[in-house]
Amino acid sequence: MIALQLKRRSWLSGPLLGAFLFLAAGCGAVVHPPAKVTDPVKVYVADYGVHSAVMLPLDDGRYVEYAFGDWGYCAYNKVAINDALGALLLSSESAFGRRFIQRKPGELYPTPHAPLPRKIFAVYASRSDVQAIERKFEQRFQKYASTKVYNYDNDTDYVRDDEHYSFINSCNHLTANTLRSLGCEVDGWAVFSNFRYSPTPAHDSRQPTSPLAPSLTALGAQ
Image (cartoon, rainbow, N blue to C red; front, side, top):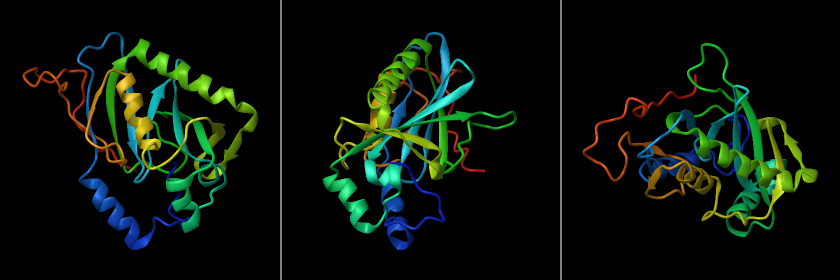
C-alpha cells in the first residue's frame, strides 16, 4: 500500500490520520541487524506514515523498492472510504509494485520522487542475501508483467499479484519478511509502518555495536 501525496485526500486524513499515527508510534516492530554479515551492503527501511518499504541496492548504483497492496487502491488511486476499507478487509485483487530510486550526490539517502519518507534508517546485510531477495521479487513482478500499470503519483509500476492483501498481510508485512530474509530479527507487530532500529543483534545483548551497524537515524523528509 503506497502512501499518497499530502495533496490527495483519503480516508487516512485529518483526525483519523492523527489517531492512526499516534497508535502506530507505539506499536512499531523492532529491527535487529544480522548477527553476521559478509560482503556488507547498505539497505534502507523507509516509513512513509502508513506504508513502509525496503530500498535494495542494485549493481548499477540505483535502489529498487517493492510494494504490496490492493489493486484498485494502489494502481488507480481509488481512495474513497469504501475503497480503503474494502482494500483492508475484502480486497479481491492484489498489486505488487516496483520503482527505482537514484541516490543523487549529496543526498543522505536515496530520495524517491514521492512521497518522501517520514523516517528512514539503514541496515547492513550480506550482498548475497540482498541479491537473492532482489531476484525473488523480480521474478514475482515479471510473472504478471503484462498487467503493468504505471502510477505517476508515486512513480511506481504495479502488476497483479497472487498473494491475498489484507491488514494481516500488507506492505508492512512485506517489509518485515524482507528484513528477515536478509538475516535481521524483527520483533513485535508488523501491522504498522513504524519500524524501529536496534543496533545490536537480538540474541547477543552483550555484543558491542558493530561499526557497520548504524544507530537509528531518523533522517526524515528534507
